[in-house]
Image (cartoon, rainbow, N blue to C red):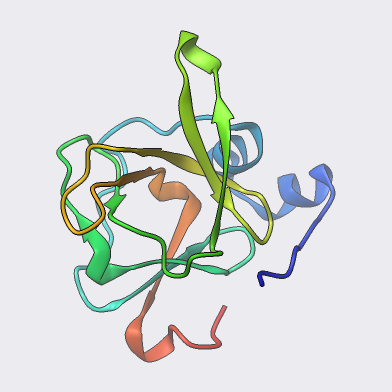
Length: 137
């Protein structure tokens, strides 16, 4: 079970860069193709806000959408979901189960083995190389 972490809104504003705050706390979206600088080496993508492991590099793929995309979360309880009806459409929003940071959305048009595409704002993620993925936040 993921342990919940919470901070006040002013705490998040003080800790996070402006765009990361707008995306993770206010549900904004970064521009596509603006965050393609993640290494291609083995490792874990963690929540920028709380450091919780969210996705594994092995599950990342190029969806052509301009946002980092993954086929599944690192663990079944890593993410939470809720219905998002903004922008005059219904989508499934995904957030960090630990601190509820908005990450992006999940769509049913991904590749095997899951058929899912977790379309994630890169600014909400921090890459941890495999040798530091355990315990280093």
